[in-house]
Length: 232
Image (tube, rainbow, N blue to C red):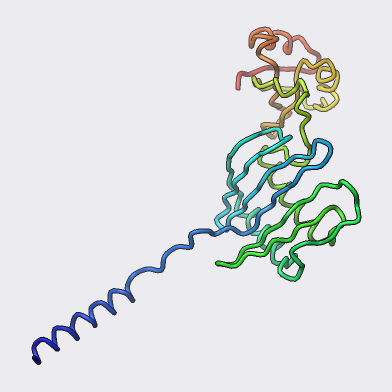
């Protein structure tokens, strides 16, 4: 009997020690903050941005967006530190979950803050308190800095949506890319996508069903202000 009791106590002590030595499980969801936009009567973009404590950002474009579907990007260390400070400063926990709006047909958005297993959504329109609007704009700025167009909705009938083929155009240093591209965009020949280097190099999109790659390269090389064209 004593022998059996000794073995039982020994097993219990071993199990207790094993439990103490086991590492704590990582949280299943380490989201820091999320932004979910809603539609309006116009072309308001609808999407979700999830920002994680690790710096990872997940995006899902739903409606009237330049990029549909899911993708992700990584914040820099400085961007992540600045974002964490901004989330803390805004203190979403102090606000009600829904803030009534007096502005008719203005787009709504929901900011959701996370803390371990706790979440707190705050939804409203363009007349929310300034700290909420500033935080939302910061999230949008980060997304756009990483190549996502989230501030401006996309008309589904816009011919630019068919401009899915890409080239990189090298412009002279003194050329303003927006002014250079405007007449070409007005004629639906191309769309200016984004800057791709510290130099004056820009990614442009064109409709591959209208112009072949070689045709676009030759046309672009012949334009004033262009010093080179590269395939993406």
